[in-house]
Amino acid sequence: MLILISDAFDATLPGKLARYGEVTDDKSRQAEAEIILVRSKTKATKEYIDAAPKLKYIIRGGVGLDNVDLEYARQKGIRVMNTAEASTVSVAELAFAMMIALPNHIARADHSMRQGDWLKKELKRTELLGKTLGILGLGRIGLALAARAKAFGMRVLGWHPDVFFTDFAEIVDSMEDTIRQSDYVSLHMPLLPDTKGIINKKTLSWFKDGAYLVNTGRAGCIVEEDVAEALKSGKLAGYATDVWLSDPPDSSSPILSAPHTLFAPHIGASSKENMLRIGHIVDLLIADYVREKESKS
Image (tube, rainbow, N blue to C red; front, side):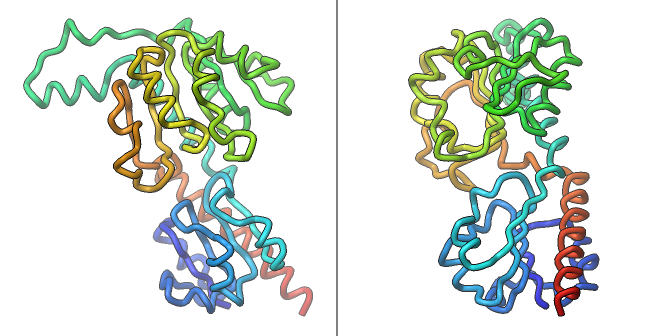
């Protein structure tokens, strides 16, 4: 059995998986692979799957499966799994770090000091204490962010179609009501037909003037042109994102030239600890697959 590691995982993973078969990161051997490990860079499209005739299992190291053609994989009898539970702490901590950095102008303050500027009077800070955070999507990461925000004395509101109670947030019935009450809005939704472009000109009109938007979920959940315009007009006081429509983003993205922004190169799931957790779950998933395979032989 050949296991192809198509994207970046922890360096110790090949050694851990060697007991199951041959492990390679040589992408030219895709056609031989029975198991392929991907993260966000590899797009397991219909064409990609067809180029791997021996493929039986795709494991996505991380949250979400929007880079895998799930329906076509199902038709081909290919199992698809992710490691969603591994990334909770890593992504929640980055989202919270961005929430702290935006109103404290951390990036601008650092850059200005390196340029020899002293912006003591220009950089006006605000505190998180007493502010309201609206979380759109109360899955594992959204709830972990809620716990951190409450520890900082924030009021936490949450909206999720099928979450009705939690100890960490006040559940609000509608996304509109959540946004209208929030000083900060953090996105933690998967990219689905219903969530694509869900932050747009209409929904941005619900935001408080001067609210902040943080996105460590999926880039496709916002309309970039509309968010850029909201930043230019001052409707949004700031936008922080770790997620992009492509990695790296296209140079024509209007977000790149918008004011009051904070960017990261899709590092939400890249903590050292998380990469080890991902590898551990991958190991468990492959062990289960091998046991099932042996039991049928």
